[in-house]
Structures are given as structure tokens and as C-alpha cells.
Image 1 (spheres, rainbow, N blue to C red):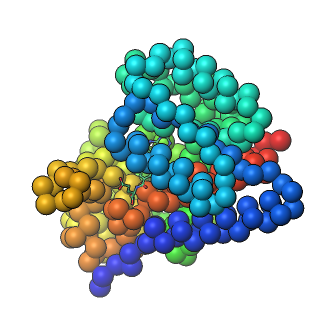
Image 2: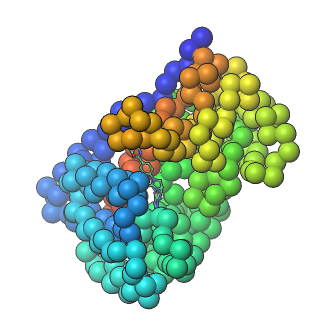
Length: 295
Ligand code: L34
């Protein structure tokens, strides 16, 4: 039996339409227009495309946005000054600094410089800590987008065995915590696996839900998947393809063609987790403008 394909693109559209309507109501009542700041350093094509999509989504939802673009030769000090200005700007509800940053800039220092109240990426240790404790916080966009997909497709999570592949600070680690939290989606038994895991296939084969966030194309193959499992593919790998218009194709971490027939639910790439990451950022920015998390 073929899997149900989770349409992240359509879901993101629905969420954005809900946000647009709420923003319209807020404006009619004389409330504040949500305002997102975005900082892009350098000219990485993938980062440029993600930032463009975030700015465009702001427009679609009636948000204001301010994009600050600087060349990769910017100093760490200059970037920290930009962050200070955004922290102090009363009209900016929240902002992000798109990662990765050039090598001479310390990502940790940059993340720590962002006011947790404006950290709509949810990367600051204060937000990560609050998330881990189940306190109100900005949830990191990709994990939150995945929770929204599980919720809106009514996928059962309670008591299920979830195997997260990859332990990054922005996806794997927070995802493992959120799915173990006492909530829906949540209440999972979680295994967090990584490059040193022994017999990874034995782990994934026991999974009712697999979150693949490793960054290696086609890493999760059909033999690693239990019949009927839910497969969430976070990978967005660019692989060369001379027949493609742009010279490359997007490939997930999951061998979609062969896993599809075995899975219960599966997310495609593109059109799965990626658009939901953008939708989650908008959710956080709206919450920031309503001062829902911090006042
Ligand atoms: N600070 N850095 C910060 N915040 C983030 O939340 C991100 N991330 C990740 C990279 N660095 C970041 C993103 O924005 C990944 N990411 C992201 C955002 C959007 C999409 C993918 C990753 C996306 O929209 N993907 C589309 C295809 C886009 C394309 O054609 O290149 C998709 O359908 O998957």
C-alpha cells in the first residue's frame, strides 16, 4: 500500500492564510503590524533562496519585514552591532540571523547576542532551555513545523517509538525533546541517533516515526523502515543534475521512491518540511508581536 504523502507546501499555505486573516483583524482593531527582521551574510544561494521565501511569506501575511544583507567580509563586531540595533528597535518584534555564517564569525556568540524576547528562531539558550522544560518559548522553526504536520494529519504519537537521526542543535536535539514532552504531538519513546550509533538500521526498523535530519541524500533506505511507519524527511540536499533547469535537484535524506511504498505517511522533498519551517517562523513572529511568550 502506498503511503499518504504529507503536503507541507499546502499545509504551509493554509497556515499562512490563517495568519493573514488574524493579522487583518489585528490591524482593523488598531493593533501592531508584526515586523520580522532578517539578517543575511554572504551570497550562499541556498540561504538567499530561504531568506527570499521568508520575506515573501511576510508580505503574503501582511507582516512588515526588514532585510539586512551584508557581504561575507563583514567583521564579527559589525554583525554584533547590527544585532544590537535590532534588539533596540522597538518596531522589530523578532529577527533571525540566517545560518550558516562565514567561518570567521562565531555562531554561538551571535546567537547569544540576540535578545531572547526577539529570538523567533528559538536558538538562544534561554529559549532552548525553556523549550526543554516545557515553559512558554519560541520553538525552533523546523521541529515546530514537524509537530504541526503530525498534528494536522492527526498522526498518533502517544506511546509510539520515534527515532531521530541526527543530533544538530537546530533539528535533531530539540526534536527529540519535543516528541518526548507530555503533550500532543508528543508522549513518544524517543531514540536520538547519530554518526556514532551502532547498527543504525536496527534502531530505525523499530521506529513508528523516523525523523531524518542527517544531510546525506538517500541515507534512509527501504530496508531501514518498518511497514506503515511515518517518515519525516528534513534533508534538503542539492545534487547535481544536468537535466534540471537550475543544474541541480533537491533530494531528501530519505530514498523516497523506494520508501514510499512501505511507509504509512511520508514527507516529500521539496514540498515537505521546508515550507513548514517558513510557516513556523511566521507563527513565532506573530506570537512575538502579540507578546504571547514574553511581555
Ligand atoms: N537562522 N538559519 C536560521 N534559521 C533557519 O530556520 C534556518 N533554516 C535552515 C538553514 N538555516 C537557517 C531554514 O530557514 C533550513 N531552512 C530552510 C528554509 C526553507 C526551506 C528549506 C530550508 C524551503 O523552503 N525549502 C523548499 C525548497 C526551496 C528551494 O527550492 O531551494 C522545500 O520545498 O523544501
